[in-house]
Length: 119
Image: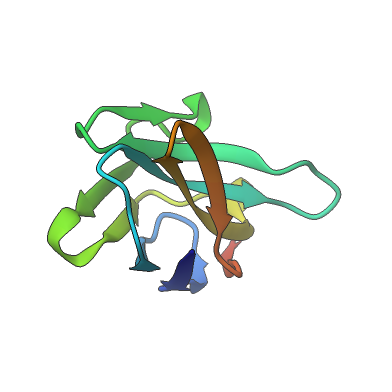
């Protein structure tokens, strides 16, 4: 079992920056993917960025060049540095960990943290 605790959300003006953190407690397999998703009101949850245990990354086109995902394996923590924030980045941001355990992928979600970008 894996528990995820997010922090770092808040209110920021357009053009500002925020850094999200997500600490994972529990058993993290050697093969895993850590990532961030977001869900705006009335919209479906979407991938923002993810990073594999090999440090490979994927970003949504809408955040490329503005957001950076990173991880600290020693702390089982994933970060999302968000720069040049726009009002359309406003959403609840969810941390996600996918673990490969005994040949099966297991999916875990954090409780979500609100990010609000004012114009």
